[in-house]
Image (tube, rainbow, N blue to C red; front, side, top):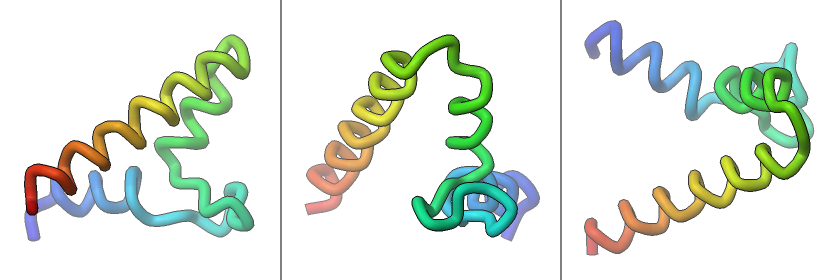
Length: 61
């Protein structure tokens, strides 16, 4: 596995116990949460992430 793949896996897919583990928060989500100016920005990011996952699944079928 390449370093880029490992970093992406760690930051975007794997929840981290030092963060909000009950909500399976990843380092990337924590960064957005902490840097976001308001809750609306977070909600837009989550909606975009969900759309991207849905589109990827649709392409795989």
